[in-house]
Image 1 (cartoon, one colour):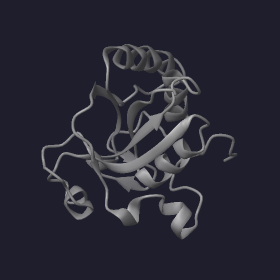
Image 2 (cartoon, one colour):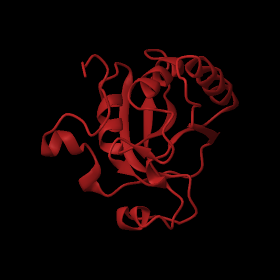
Image 3 (cartoon, one colour):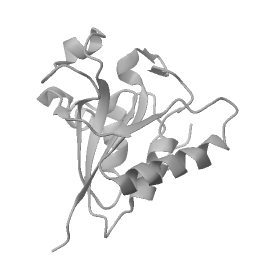
Image 4 (tube, helix red, strand yellow):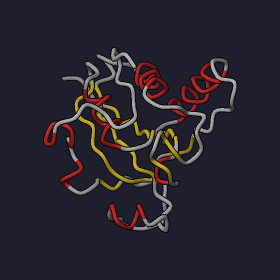
Length: 164
């Protein structure tokens, strides 16, 4: 029986981020939610009100025997523009910031190294914050597996393997 690990990413609207990570072999689950703020058990309305400090994020449970954290970091960089500050595409606000929330010192080191490699690909500075993972609050049920339930393929993100 293999063990699981957790990774948490914020890359704009969580619907597209969740959908992208669900496609990665070795990902067991991806849950949309909120993290990085100061409000306990926030609601979507509160987060959109810009008073909680939370980002829309996705908590990924994965099997490290099947997919590496570095691979997940690669997906993260691919599905959004890490140079945008507090926005992704048409979505604007601090809840759409780019962030990697790390769960272990090894993740922190890998995230920093990955960010540094990614910076070489961009003219603008990377805006992605890398910080220890605080409590994650799952979003309301209607946000979970949103595209599976409601149709659609993505918000603003380019899913792995897709063409723009």
